[in-house]
Image (cartoon, rainbow, N blue to C red; front, side, top):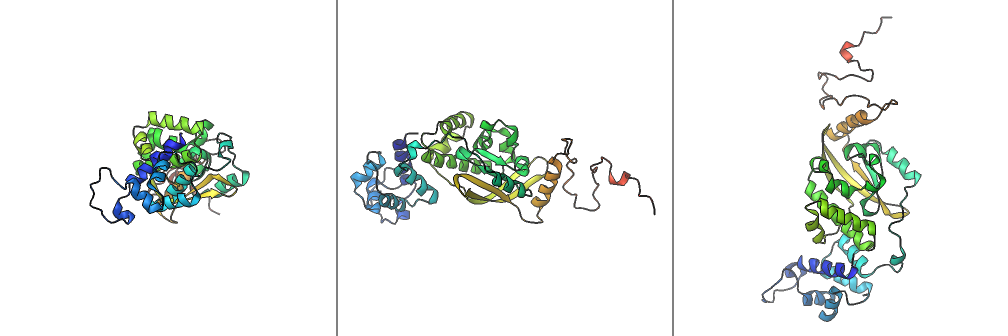
Length: 319
C-alpha cells in the first residue's frame, strides 16, 4: 500500500462524509460542488493553513506533529478506529520499516488453556490480517472447522467473504462482511508493506463481488464488542454477545469470545451442538442431533451413546 495515496484517499473520504452543520460551521451560502467539507474549512477547524492541509491531503507535508494529527481528527469528527488509522498513516512508528509483519505468530500455551476453559461458548484468537491462530471446539462447530484447513487458509475474512456457506450461516452477512473489510483496512494502515495482506486483498477483490466497494469506502474498524447471530444447519438460530480483547503481552493478537445468556435457547442449542460434535474415543460423534424440543418431557428421545432408544432399553432387574 502506498502510504501517501492511502492518506490522501482517507482524508478525502472522511472530509466528504461530514457536512458543515455536523462540523459546527455556519452556512456561508456558497454552492457546494462536492459533498462534505471543503479543504479550507477543514484547515480552519484544525487550526492550520489551507496550503498546509492541501499538502497533507496530497501526501507532501512530511511528518506532521501529534498535535496537528489530533486537531485533524477533531475537525473531521473521527471515531476511535479512524483516529488510530490516521495516526498510523501520518505518524508511523520510527521502527515500522524494520518490523516484520510476515513473521509467524505463536499462541502461548496459557491462551490455548483459556480457550479450552471457555468450552461452553465459542472462542478464538485472531492475529494479523484476521488470521485465526487458535480456536476452541465450539468456535469450529459454529463457524467452520479452521483446524481442518491448511494453516495459511485459516482466516476469518477469507471465511466470511469467500466461503459460500458463510453467506447462509452468518446472520446479517453484509454488515459483518463489510465490518471485516474495515478491520483489514485498519490493518493495512499499520502494516503497509505486508505482502501477505496485499495478497489477501487481491484474493478477496477477485473472489467477492462486494469487496471492492467496501474497500474503497476507506472505512476502518477495530472490533471490540457487539451482537452476532448465526443460522446453524443443525441447531438453528444462535444469538451471541461478543467481546474482543487484545492479548496482554501481544497487541497483535485478539481474543474473541461469543457469550450467551444463561438458560437461553442459544445456550441449550450450544450444549446440544457440543454433545453432537464432540468425538468419542473412536472418533465418532456422541449422538445424532436430536430435535430442539428435547426439553419437552413428552418429546420422543433419540438413541443414547449405546445406540438404544430409552423406551427399548430393558428394565433393570428387581432387587
